[in-house]
Image 1 (cartoon, rainbow, N blue to C red):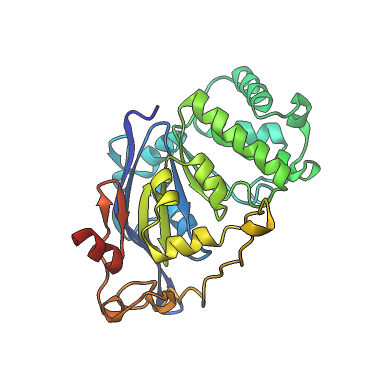
Image 2: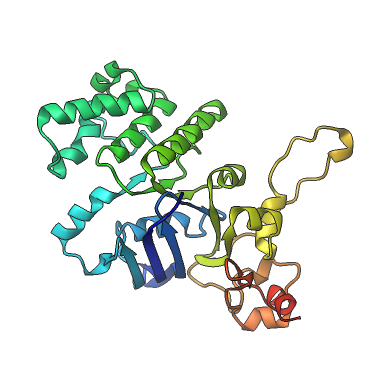
Length: 323
């Protein structure tokens, strides 16, 4: 069960300067995460999910806000202090092959972080590599293979083993199954669940696959154009979505009906996500929202909720709460 508070993110923003223009990637995002807990991040491409994950790990520097990990403000750590802290924070990338050095064998790739962190002796590291290979379901012979010699599922298992090599407490899973076949996705999902139970890992799980997010997550945060539009427990959010954007996302899930009576047309989200260089005024979703009214175009809604654990940034939801 989740216990100690591991991560606290407060009002974090990240912007990029591109050809003299400001790209608003993440705006004023806050959340907290406990040990052994999974936070799912969902939203369309360009909503800021991956940028947020990298900013939390300080792979990208935040322009505003604080990230406190194990009671320490990461922005205040020196380079050497941050390197030591990285032992407890790892990431699994979306493209397993691109994230692995093609010139390093699998065993060397898994051992590399342990060498950087000065963990154990050479013999102990080799034993740890073999232990991890076995734990993620790979044969010991895979240690001598190069990444291109493995299947996509095997490459992702190597990525997981590499992330676990330094015994982290937090793992950011950035679309870890999107490049895999469906049958392999199930294996990776079950592996991640088993590892979490065994090692009490905390996950930030980034995915477009809402079914997987519902299956894995304790809590879910919905991002749109870099802003949080809804967050709450997985059960609350999937059974009682409050924001129009969340509802459309859930309605767009492809479900195979058990009978012709259950068939329904696919629901698509009208229009495209606005440019992050010029985000709309008011509610960021209002240009595509069929329920928007004048207030939505000029006044940004506050993230609040029907309960203290289920929050929504929507004027319509705010009106319902006040009634």
